[in-house]
Structures are given as structure tokens and as C-alpha cells.
Length: 113
Length: 116
Image (cartoon, rainbow over all chains, first blue to last red; front, side, top):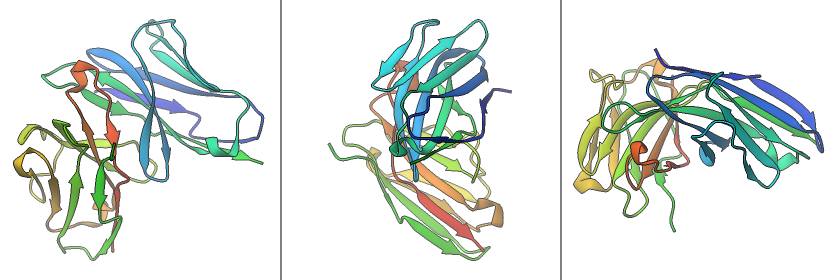
């Protein structure tokens, strides 16, 4: 059975800290690893990682995929209170005619001023 | 560009009652998804439409859940009768094409259902 495991499940930091969120996966017909930020209810897309070892960056956020170790990390530098959210990781199972996303439980990040 | 619209935002019902959720995807998006997110869990796919046809409903509890996509645009998800364990956020998402085509999912703000 496909599974995605995120750690830690929750994290409290202070503004300016750097955080690393972890995601391990066991997904059949694996194609890509996606990160979403969920504030209140609506998840918003952050990154899609398909190739191993290539870092993707967007401002203070960056992410990388290790397809040998079945692992991805999401880094946030110089955290701000606006980064407080649940960060979801999802593995894309490329099987079937459509593909399917397998989500982890998320990491709840709280950034204190 | 308007996002994915969902209504209502919140719904409180008693067990054994019926409830319906509505979703209007982004214009031109052929694929529509309904996800269930139980508190503390990641979203779980319930059903996926490609235009007005169902392409994956393997995790939909068909004895109580039903969904349709009218004319390949709007969609409704119904629960009848509701159980306590149906309490969750129901997220609708849409994409231009399929995930196999590396299309991104755009999520709505969800409907939070509480079954008492």
C-alpha cells in the first residue's frame, strides 16, 4: 500500500529561525513529489520535484528530492509568522490512466514573533 | 483568474441526515476531484471526474456517498445518510488535465462538515 510519512508532525519556532520539514515515501509507479502549504483549509501548490538532487527554490523556501533514499525535505529560512501553516507532502502515483496523489498527514508549523 | 469555488463553508448536521456540497472549478479545467480531509490527516481522494465522466471512485463509500458533475462543469457531492465518522473537511480541486500530464491541482477552500 502506498504511504507518505511526514516528520515532525508539529513544530514551533521563532521568527528568523530556519526549519527543515521531512517527507519519506513508498509510492508505486512513483513519478513526482509535491509540496503544498495549507492555511486554514485550501492547500496551495509550492513545488513539484521529479528529478533527484536538483534543488528547487522560491524565495525563502527550497526543496530537494532523493529518489534513492525515497526522501524529500522542505527548507524555510528566516521564518516569518506568515509561514505558519500545515505543510503537506504528496507522492504522485503515475499508474492507471490518470495518476493519483498520496498525501502525508502534514507538518503543522507555528512561527512565534 | 477565479479560483475553485465551494459552498457552503460550514455545515452542521445530525447523524442520519443528508447533506450536499457544491463545487465550481476553474474555467476550462477538465479534471475535478473531491477529497476528504479528516482532522490531523492528509487529504484522501474520494472521486475524480474527467469532464463529466467518473475516472476513479475506488475510495468512495458508495453506500452513502454519491457525486455528479453536471455538464462537465459544476459538481455536487452528497452524503446520505451521514455518520459521525464523516466529520471532515471536503475539498474540491480542479486541474486543466490529468496528474499524469504533470498538471497542478488547484484547491477550493473546502466545506467543513460536523456530524453530531
